[in-house]
Structure formats: structure tokens, C-alpha cells
Length: 342
Image (cartoon, rainbow, N blue to C red; front, side, top):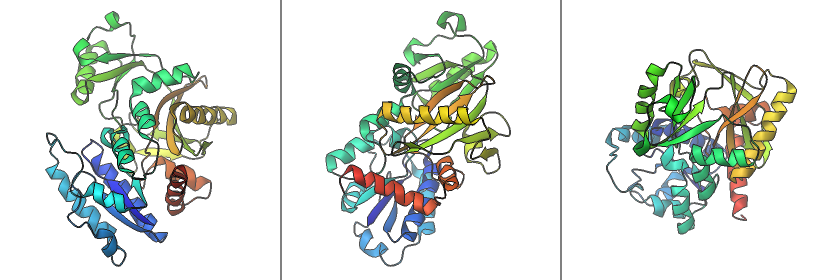
């Protein structure tokens, strides 16, 4: 198949997306597909790229070109799609969405592709938008009996710096509503740090969540086509599972299958499948959890386009089931194509 692997963009997770995209592109080419790597934000001059990439194509070189463009990202630019992106994607059998962060996972690109009749991997625009907005997702969790930390929603224009006024006790977690990779997230244990935590979160977005802090172990569960993968535990060597610990090799110990009671693992898997169903994540996703000392499970969030880097969680979970990275990428293409009856 002709496949566009779409990466880059202008979100805070641009560089991670480039890593994911290049890995996926290599994997799909190894499976015999005519896959090409494109930066959604800058695009390509050559609209006939598919014809040329069928012969010689160096993914690593393309990755370096896209990384070099990162310095030219202009946050004030109104146009999101780069040159010829829509035209080239229209020529593909499917677009593999290797984008991460708000502009990529929030449903806007998915909605545009639906209008252009472009096939893509992953969930549709509405499910993507709901899952990306942690406040909206939390309402779906609560409505469907999925346990999650208690919290409140706050807009920048309604900002209140008094914990007593908003009815939150310490410790608490402050985080942007729609961000990814834990960017802008703070764990507040002293009231003197609360204002700074609000500043950090509101720097990224105008809407935030303030939640009770659940002390416990961190886990994640991938869901592919309604079936939960083995549970993986994420144990940062320092602090919590923030941006550095997610993507810096050696900063986190990841164990799969997780060393946890079978009953707790099954409960997380059950909730993960329920989250995917509640949000309409009908192809693949990854659901994050915390488990406290009493083995009580709390759902944190759903990831609609899980990372596909060397340290990403979903590929590690699939590997435990005997599915290597190349086969996983193929599976994600196949189940996404099924949505379109292809």
C-alpha cells in the first residue's frame, strides 16, 4: 500500500512525534509498503513522492530534514497544513497518524481528513476531541462508573489562587486540560507552590484541571480493537512520569507484565476496555492508571495516538504477546482500514 506517515506538527510533542513517525515508516517499509514520512506542518514540494519513494527512500535522511525544520515552527502562522500535505495524503491508501500532542490528537486533523475523504489510523474526530480534553473525558469516566481522581475544572479568566476558596486540599495535581506528555503538570504539596503551579499550567492553556493527588504506582494498558493488552508498570527513578522520564532512555523502569496482583491487573484491563468503549476509541488507544497502597485503581486519562518510539509503552505491551514492532504497525494499519470497509 501507499502510506503516508504523518509526524511533526507544531505541538509541544513535535520531536517525539518525529521519532515515532520515523520508526513507524521504517517498520511499514520493512513490511513491503511504500511508506513515506511527511511533516504535517511543512509538507513537501514534490507531489510525486510516492512514485519516487517506491525505488530508493532513506527514512533516516527524511527524519533529519524534518528535525532541521523544527527551528522554523511559527506559532503565529495561521495555516496548519504544510505544502501539498492534503494532496499527497489524498493519494495514499491510508495515513498513519504518528502525531502527538494537542494539534494531532484533538480531532481537528481527523475532521479535516474526513471532509477530504482521506483514510487515517486511529479514532475519529469526536472521540479524539473528547479524549484529549481531560475535563470532558473525566465526565465520561464518572458517567460510566470508571474510578478517577476527584477534581475541579478552572478557566484562566476565572482563576482563583486560594485552595480554600476552590475547596481543594493538599497534596493536589495541577495540569493543562488538553496537553500531552505531562507538560505543564505539577504536584503541589505545599500551599506556597500552588500559584506557581497555576502559572505553569496556564502558560500552556487557558483551561486546567486541579485534582486530588493519588499516591501510588503508575500503570498503563493498551487497548487494540476492544481487547486489553498486558499491563505495564511505569516506575520513574526520580519524581513522576513527566516529559523527561517518558522520553529519556534509562530514566524510568518499565515492567511488563506488571508485577501486581492478578485481580488488580484484570481490573485495570476491564476499566481500560470500558474507557475505550465509553469514549468511542474503536481502533487502538492506551489508558493510564494509578494504584494506591490499598490496591484501589484510578483512571487518569486516555491516549488516542500512543507513542511509537523506542521507549514507548504500547510496543512493549504488544511484544509480551509475541507481536514485534513491525507486526504491531501492520496490525494498526489493518484494523484502521477495517473501519473503511477495506
